[in-house]
Length: 176
Image 1 (tube, rainbow, N blue to C red):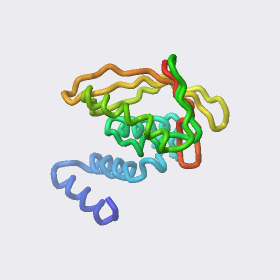
Image 2 (image 1 turned 90 degrees about the horizontal axis):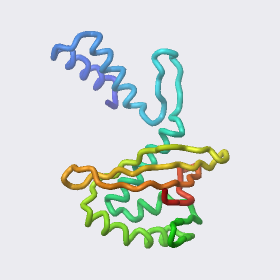
Image 3 (image 1 turned 180 degrees about the horizontal axis):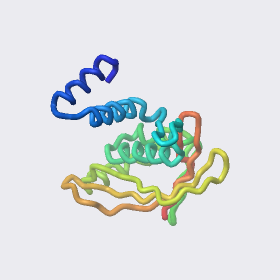
């Protein structure tokens, strides 16, 4: 709803369809909250405003990252990383200094997601540990859905995240 007139017509339409005044006020409140989503949230009990928590910001970030992973959006994946960064595993370590290097490292992952027919990824944040004012270690368990809507095997990773001016960025990835 972009104008008060549209909001009014929506409420009137809701009431004419059988919704009472209380239901209409709930509709209005929800529409207002939705229009402010991501900026401010109003607490009805305390009548105070609060910004999103760090956990909310991280959840949004990992949802964006997961969508880029399953879509094969290599530039989108690269945009989630800080430079320089590193991926460390049992068998290798890979350091990168440019978004192109990150993109090249994920070119091999995209066919794997397609082969497994993965269409969605959801990050369950298991733990966060604030290390400094800007750095947070985040334990994530990935859950995937395949093209048939079935849950698919996921992985666990720890991400070293830097909270930058433009949002969270991945500095390091470690399995487990």
